[in-house]
Length: 327
Image (cartoon, rainbow, N blue to C red; front, top):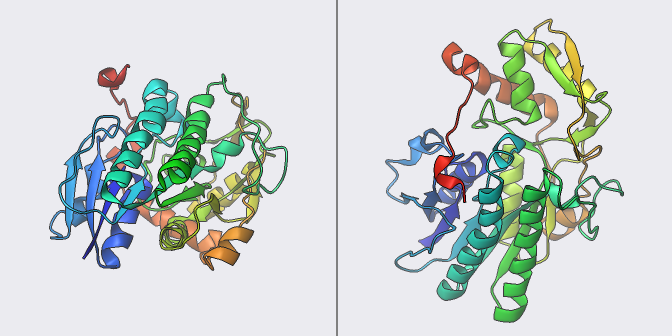
């Protein structure tokens, strides 16, 4: 069997990637330090003989015995509630963590795919966003720790590709949703669904005219896997170009959940992007991928997941302790 290392394996996307690789007869070593990931996301894999787990921070030296064919680097806080709490750790995993996994890929002669993000475009001045757009990012704003960590991740990945000949792939992930999202991770879908299920009013920031494009996790993972197996080394957008305003999306959530909550408005956070929509021309042409799951179908599956959580979980407010990661 071929063998893959997945960093951030206990996270939302990382855990689904583990499933995808195992389903394609690739043995998986999952790695996570669990500051934002959860073992519950990979509990179903514990009895799989082709899966193993290592609790490790990728910012520290990584030592893996035996051969590796693939490395998928998904270790990073990915929601504002996390990277605003642990900004330095967010920067370190994008810099030191990426440096470590690229060094491992070079040593093992492994193909490596790194997870970048639509956030590298910042608050975009072109719409939709194409891969050749350089972005509009505030380096010193509160979101800059995540945006710049991912921009650096792309730069060092290309440096390793050009200077050392490492076999690299870069995926730019747009808003993704589905089962295993954390209910209180601060992103709009779990936030809206959690509020609806708790009987709270839905909070819209700004006037709700800002747009997002949401991709169901099954589609996102399929696109990432196809990119991994391709021979294309430059960044590729993977996301769903079906765009909707946040206000209209809030109304959809109220209709989907069958609740009668009001929509309340709060000030727009600093540097919050006003538009987000991927141009997926490259994905269609190069890896023959485009999303298959419509928002209506995907949202029903996601709501069923959140609705299955206990009332205790729905009411819980996460108080994560980051004291071990202050530097």
